[in-house]
View (cartoon, rainbow, N blue to C red):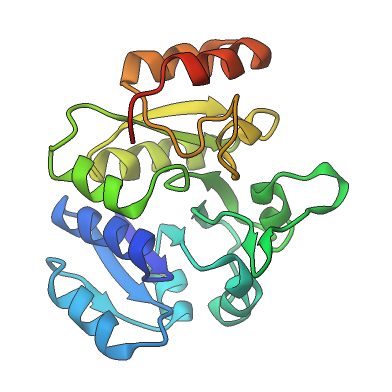
Length: 222
């Protein structure tokens, strides 16, 4: 699969690295440190560096991994996203903490309004980059990665990417359930917690109130 990584920090850099190692074609972009981008691409088999517009045009799937405060800047230089699958890894942490969002929107829905035409998914946002590296290296055993999406193409593509990064993908549902996996860390949320695959599937299949209870009961140390 052709993957464009926009935002090559700890999350985006690791996702791109693991996907390249899994045989996907990767273009890294959007870093203030050009040398860092070059080093990252050099350590990722077959990967290369480009602009955000290059990454988006090349990609079948865009991994969107920029800081919340840089979302508008990144989107402004990416070009059109019509028909692209975009996997949003962002969390709504502004300069003063968690940013309030209008109208009760989830963070992914808010970003979706800024990405017209994209088939959107949410993933790679619930666990630290360091923990994601340790899962990819096999240190943690089988660990689930929750993701949310409504578009069938986005669901299928995100499953492939999650597996390529060493996790067992678990689809939590659509936007009516995505709050379970969005920041901040809190009781009744899976954000910041890790789960074995069977336990994660129980959470994903449960009604929301039961899912919130299970999120606290079934977590493992992350």
